[in-house]
Amino acid sequence: MSLPAQAAMNAGEVQSFLEQVFEQAMHIKVEETAPGFSRCRLPFDTKHLRPGGTISGPSMFQLADCGLYAMVLGTLGPVALAVTTNLNINFLRKPGPRDMIAESRALKFGSRLVIGEVSLYSDGDPDLVAHATGTYSIPPR
Amino acid sequence: MSLPAQAAMNAGEVQSFLEQVFEQAMHIKVEETAPGFSRCRLPFDTKHLRPGGTISGPSMFQLADCGLYAMVLGTLGPVALAVTTNLNINFLRKPGPRDMIAESRALKFGSRLVIGEVSLYSDGDPDLVAHATGTYSIPPR
Amino acid sequence: MSLPAQAAMNAGEVQSFLEQVFEQAMHIKVEETAPGFSRCRLPFDTKHLRPGGTISGPSMFQLADCGLYAMVLGTLGPVALAVTTNLNINFLRKPGPRDMIAESRALKFGSRLVIGEVSLYSDGDPDLVAHATGTYSIPPR
Amino acid sequence: MSLPAQAAMNAGEVQSFLEQVFEQAMHIKVEETAPGFSRCRLPFDTKHLRPGGTISGPSMFQLADCGLYAMVLGTLGPVALAVTTNLNINFLRKPGPRDMIAESRALKFGSRLVIGEVSLYSDGDPDLVAHATGTYSIPPR
Image (cartoon, rainbow over all chains, first blue to last red; front, side, top):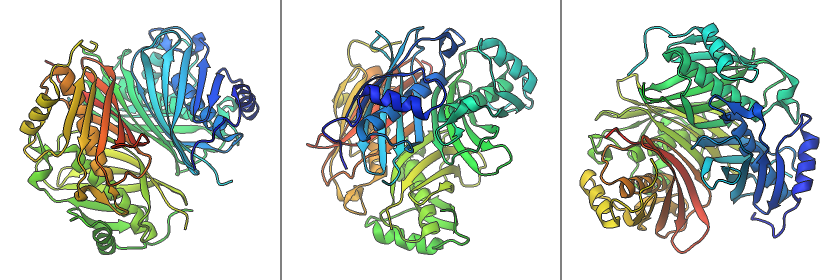
């Protein structure tokens, strides 16, 4: 299996799907999808803060995990039961009190496993704030 | 540097410290600290749910990260500026709709880096739900 | 899928299988297998050394990877095409100029994915030298 | 601390340094260094093979680890005691029976920790074969 020529769902469709399957309010916005790619935004909100006024590690983890899931959904269409099996995250710099952007790219798009990487930035700043790699298991269809 | 003979802060002191430095409500309870060890509890709450009724990955990440931090604090005393530099988490089974328990242990306790592992369980069930390893950077003192 | 009651191959059978499928000389010895467990030994040899007289990181990686594979083989029987998809290793202490021991345990034994952890020791010393977690993908049978 | 404007050692100097500090034959060739960057080559050799005729995981790990070390050396100059504390590697595709190339880039270049990523390719093929992220601890100077 390899990447399709076109995304199966656009950003708005992925956003609606995520809001439907997660009962809780989703604060993350899906801005773009393409085969093997997504860009998501975590709007700035004081409840993501940790000591020192920066965005917390768990909020960055959530954004990275959601970005990979949006990349899988955008590429394959609605696969509610795809699950993260592994996520490895490196925290590089303290992010500022601004929106965070996650760009997710497939490193491998197999029929059973998708492996991707996520680069996290503060909006408007080119320096990488965190970097993650993760594995998604795709259920048999 | 190696482990001290006694914990520098007990569970209640670590809990108070966490509540002070994080302005947001902390839902995680610190139940026990010992040199190189902590046990924390995430009380069950529907807002940690993900599709299928299980606790979400980001909630488990937060519990693992907090467990490692509580282990560092319990061992060293108040080190507000210790930061997670890396966390790798494997999701193993769907947790049930119950409290989750995180047991964190130091694998290495150096003067500049602490590396630890965290085992996450559903309360009352011996099967591991998730497993994480992480690195904390300790600022010069 | 869960762990069988008995190992499918004993240590000698796993050792022979590894020597057959890898054309190169295998220096690692499989000492014990059980369902979801293996213990392997890397005999001390100056060619594993790195600056400072300690065993090199790549030699420890090889021992960890081989230990996980021996655990999968011992549990399932001959599955030549099982492949490592991810391995995360933390180096904790400099090992001494002695044999190294790897104890591998399954954290999850699924029909498609096996996730395990490996603890690496210097022979005769209880302090952990390195710790790894890894994912094996099991081909459909 | 951030990246210097120029590499402290060029590819040939890094190669000589590696050959001096590692007593064993080093088969890996350092092809290029720049601040926060290195490109290394593992010449094809049947002893790196694993079942199915592809290059073994441990050989790829060694190339990734060496690539990160060459990136650190090229940037900082001779720092023999820099040590890998963590390396996480994802194996994506079976590499063919050809030279492998590792391109290593700093994600963060701090005074105490360097975090980098490595992309591994088969020579002449643009598809990523493996991807690693790792942490190097830099001793106080």
